[in-house]
Image (cartoon, rainbow, N blue to C red):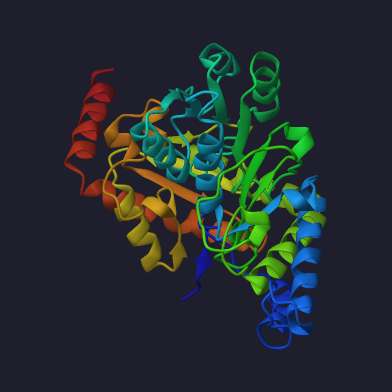
Length: 399
């Protein structure tokens, strides 16, 4: 059976060139970067060289690259770290209702510590309105955290416009979760106008278990992990040297290949979206029609449970998802889709197909060939769909 991977938003396969770059740091240059002997110095040089590459690719300073275990830790460090450092200046934070749970749960944690959090609504396409950010700002606002693009529906937020409002109207810091955008679209600290930016290597063909928080010079943070002076006392623990080297290589490759990869993936995505919208009834595209990630296609099929769709696709060798991999064990409908105004029943029927640089036209066509039979079978088992179909037939006969 042909196996087709349509879940690149959850994770990506590690590029063989990245694996090759990492290998020497498992066996040959295995020293602890904090050790002062020759083995340690060689490891330290590799770490700082990789840090410099990451900084250059994102328009940051090497000193502002804090190595983490991934995007979730980077989000936690940004939000909790800023809150702890600036709590004497204010205790108000602004975020959106469609953030990743690493952001939402960090904000909920801070609410229990006496902070006030404003959760901004989104429109039907999942976009935050700039004027809502402006209206929510207060004198005591210390942090605004809005994701660059949504991991479920792919909507890209107007980060630069939001940043301009935040900087003009307040002294708050601005953080963006860029886990889904780094390596997929151009990301540059100055162009976005943010103070803190989170990323994760495994989203752009790097290794799992390593990420970074990028901060501007002068940003104050309190550490979440104590026990060592690593990362300039901002994140204790021996650095994952092979992972950091791999992350730097993956980012370098992703940005270099972006001019060719992005339009190709976008073309495949648009073909997939139009084919589904034209080929099915009772289906909707979730997310912004144009301001969306190149590889993201998120649909809601009415009268079908998303989990049943996924299981049937998997039986055909097609890997997809219904939303965030971090909430795949939950039976609750997507908080993102509910925030966009979908009812519970429609939100339960979501399907996310996310394409990557290895996705082929033949794979997309296979998905489009297999999907109708699955949808037809599942709807045939749905009493609600049967009722709707009979009503439509009655209306047709009446006419």
